[in-house]
Image (cartoon, rainbow over all chains, first blue to last red; front, side):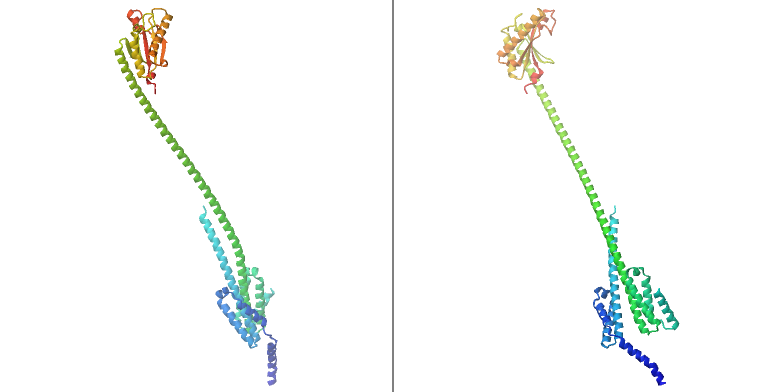
Length: 120
Length: 322
């Protein structure tokens, strides 16, 4: 019975050990997350504050996991922080472009109205 | 296609194995499906969409392999984020493209507006020029009318002045004629042999030839002087007077003789007046012979009347001198 249990448990422990040993520190992922969060534009801060807040929290958590050498958790947190930051930035980009387009279209409409009004 | 099979297989596997559906994975599938179905995304952000697809596939494989929910959720979270990023990027690029087009359109409309403004300005300029020309024409016409009216007024004034002058002259003339007539009447009363009458030719003083000359002679008798002195004094008082001295005879004697005699007698009267100081240029003479009788030559009384000297003071002479 004990042998059987050992036989069952051993491969699991071995697997876990192998997993831990095979996970290198996610330096690249962390660097990428740091860059994206620190380069957040004022537009992104204004347009998607929750997303950026989440990105910062996850980056902070990733830094903590790194310190604790919990590399798998650190990688995941860094990857999610990077995606959150990119999402916030792309949403802000989209909003900026959308409002610029709306402004130009409104200008065109105003010009056309002016033309129609002056039409003899 | 391969991706679709994997996803379907993963879904089936999850369903068959009775594993609980991973909420995050469901959300990731939804987000990816929306992105893929958006034509802007396939056109403007194909690489981002492919990245999202790869990530979702990874999540599906983890789920199909029965990996822990936590592992699946992490990759699914990344897949959902990347699908939404692809959508945002595509929409941004689409808006960018539309913006470029809209800016071209705005330039086109602005050009059109400027062209129309230029046309309107040109039209306004032409209209203003026409109005100016019209005003100029109206002003010129008004000036012409004014000049015409002034000319008419000046003309009317000149005519009125001339009429007034003429009236004045006529009045003066009439007054002078009146004066002359009065003087002649005085002369008539002083000289018994002198008759005055007014004719169309002017004032005519008639002197009987018998008073002035002997029969057939053209030398003035002594008694003639007194009558002619009065005529000379009249002419001296009125230097504007010119006279015509005409001699007449009766029908006794030859025609040529009578004409010659009447001429010599008229010249004798002129000489006498010139001797009294009257300018010769003021006195014309004519010998009329026996023409223009004033009475019948068949009686002695008539013949006496026909022998005469007439001194004519023409109207224009009386009115002359001004």
